[in-house]
Each structure stands twice: as C-alpha cells, then as structure tokens.
Amino acid sequence: MALTQQHKQEIISEYQVHETDTGSADVQIAMLTERINRLSQHLRINKKDHSSRRGLLKIIGQRKRLLSYIQKQDREHYQTLIRRLGIRG
Image (cartoon, rainbow, N blue to C red; front, side, top):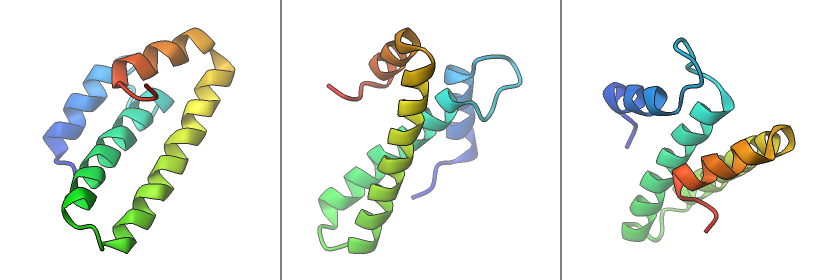
C-alpha cells in the first residue's frame, strides 16, 4: 500500500532541514523507513509474497546507503536521526 500524499507531507515537515526541503537525505530515510515498516507488516500476513520481500530488501539497501552517507558526513547527526526514527536498536 502506497503512502498517501498527506502522510508524505507530514513526514517531510517533520524531518525537513529547511523550509523548502523535500529531498534531503533525512527526508528520504524517513520515507524509506515508513515504507519498510509498511512492507514488514504486509509480509507478516503474506509470508509467501516473495516479490514484495525482494522489494523490501532493495529498500533496506537504499536506506543503508543513505545512512552510511550521513554517518560519514556528521556522526552526531547520524546518531540523532536513528534515535528519532527508532532504528538500529
């Protein structure tokens, strides 16, 4: 199930760096995290949906690359972001 436009706007407004920001790494990671959570719920119900599982793994890889980029740029910002998103235990 896709994210609604209203839900996307809420995520963008929560994680944007400045007023007109819609595509920074923070916003992209927040969007990917939301998609990962939704797909994980779907796969708990539909255990044999292998094409969605493959898509989930691709999204996880994309988020991992973006998180790696932020970690290289600013370690403190990285720690704050993963704490806000509740990922990586």
